[in-house]
Image 1 (tube, rainbow, N blue to C red):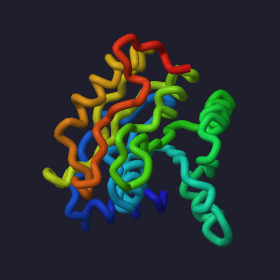
Image 2: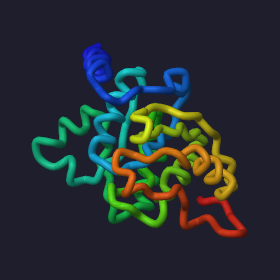
Image 3: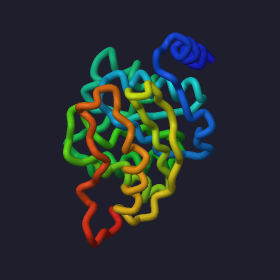
Image 4: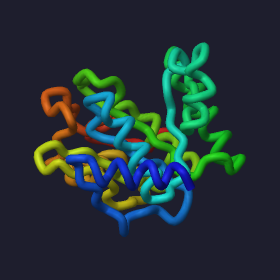
Length: 196
């Protein structure tokens, strides 16, 4: 397959090291991409997926799919979303997952590449509504490593689940460490209720 050949060449020439070969999910999963701090994250995500043979789809703002870029972005696994209506994004993606259209759904919950106060909770709602687990993908400039971490099941206890996610990402810096967002959801409260 040509994508695997491209990925092998990329990793042979790259300063980055791919880790987590044994962490490839064996069933449909939400692949978290974090910390998301640079456009290079997209290149690394494709290189990881192609090298490990993961069929991925990713969510992108509608403007990325306009004009001549549209067919290319879709061919690379892009799914256009309207960020003006985040509730509809979740319901659309849930519908696609139930239709069996997605194997690995890449989501960058820290949103845009600038620092935010919170992660967006759509990934958690999709996981809850579809029963899909979360595979923790990462980029860490301090060690020049990127790849896949553990796959975890969400329990509905938002704070407990996010504590596990925070523990994993605690030492991951991203390509641009100054833009890193702490993994935290607005929905985390002393008396958590499941996101639904």
